[in-house]
Length: 411
Ligand SMILES: Cc1cc2nc3c(=O)[nH]c(=O)nc-3n(C[C@H](O)[C@H](O)[C@H](O)COP(=O)(O)OP(=O)(O)OC[C@H]3O[C@@H](n4cnc5c(N)ncnc54)[C@H](O)[C@@H]3O)c2cc1C
Figure 1 (cartoon, rainbow, N blue to C red):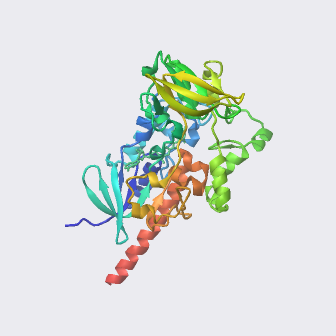
Figure 2 (cartoon, rainbow, N blue to C red):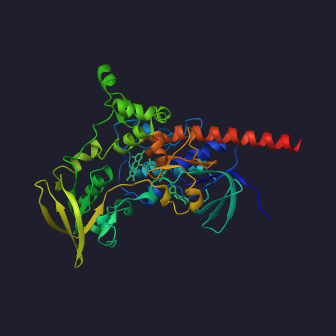
């Protein structure tokens, strides 16, 4: 006997998926949510890292807005401040797991291996072997499908080259020479952690300088300073303020402007608290581009172009690519190709309605894959509240309309 379609299936149990599940639950909307809770944070980030976002910008969304990071820290007697204080990842993941137990208790820790479409219903297959149908699907899959490694490194073995997301801890690099590529928070923090773990570290940065974010929200700022550079979920200036608070307005910008902003906004930079753990601790070569890399015995030879415009050869034991992520829907291997081709895309990113629905009716996408439509805030936990309200309101209305139509049809 075929089981009836579940109204909503959520793929992914990170901050966005958990927020949506919490709101659907509060609305009494039947749903299922799949994925190991917080897997990206628990398996693909260094276990001793600190968050770049500040406390008030790192809440998972519940309908009452009471299950905040601050509430959890107060209940659990942990250190917390809304701003200025860097949050250890452990505090955030413990908070998220508490949120999951309290507000999204029905997460099924199994992967979705296939999403297909038949007769306007989605057909899902799970790693557990179960199959089900769903009337709506929300993709809340985060970044991990989209790791980016430059072509020059792509074919080298993992003992010589790895992406930053491959590491939880760096102790096995003690005594080895490691070259870190990139100038973003992940590259710089990985470099600091490698150095502190006893590795001999060098960082290669293509840009002229390494950028550092200023310390946010100094508590004693004057009114004038606050007006000149207002505090927001993404940082302390007017642009960050606009992106944090106006994802709905961002959606109305012309597509070209949105793409340009999302590509350039919040470019690579380190958090203010990381600076003393990098500057003066190990060499950071700026204006240095990686041209090629090849194995030499059990080491790696890198050919780089330095600030003098000349090529140099550098030897290293390992290269860690802190080269980020490139969202491309075509890399979601669990999504049936017939669905992927029906989703209107701009450079691999789905074109979404103001309600986060793709051009496949009933298929929604939130989090980093929605950044091209709603702006840079979707790359951060801070965007989860906005996305969740829009998606859940739309799903609730759609389901109510179809139940009324079904009732009228049967009456
Ligand atoms: C090193 C690093 C540091 C960061 N620091 C910050 C920070 O300080 N503050 C901040 O706001 N943001 C930070 N980010 C960005 C952060 O990753 C996003 O803000 C946040 O994780 C987005 O939430 P999400 O739910 O969309 O994605 P995720 O947290 O990645 O959750 C998505 C989940 O979906 C799961 N999934 C994927 N495919 C499937 C499938 N087929 N079946 C089942 N499950 C699936 C994944 O395993 C994952 O658990 C950081 C990112 C990185 C890489």
